[in-house]
Image 1 (cartoon, rainbow, N blue to C red):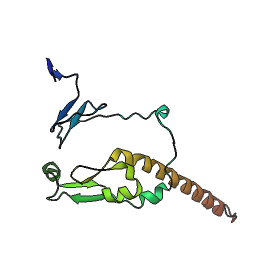
Image 2: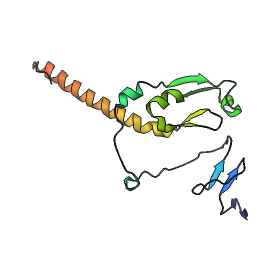
Image 3: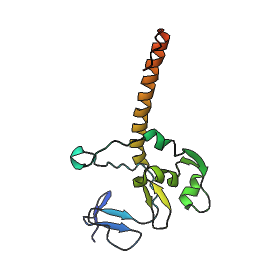
Image 4: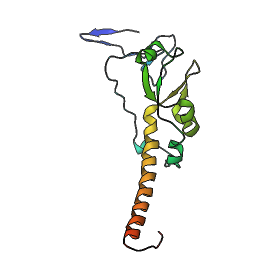
Length: 154
């Protein structure tokens, strides 16, 4: 592997694996084994074009699923990494609860610890909001009918 110095940047045209031996993989250009601390933002974009997707279906029973997971505050304990412990008090979800409703967004790491792909919780929340909106609109119509003296059920 050859790194070249181009002023402020170091370039390498081959895949790089930091922290362990092995090849990053055919599609990966960089793989970091172990924890990584970054002092500024990391920006990533996932391809989401419809032309890349098959079997597209809305998430069903989204409110039911959301009600099964808790948003929690917590303190990182001694089993967590040093970086996590430095954060101290934090907020998040419980991977085991999320796994019951969206197993495809929970990963089990090599050490057996479960991790959540938090950005993939957003589609569940979008569908839950849409389900709630239908309920709100139906209730609004019922209230309007009751206020207008019309007791016919919707």
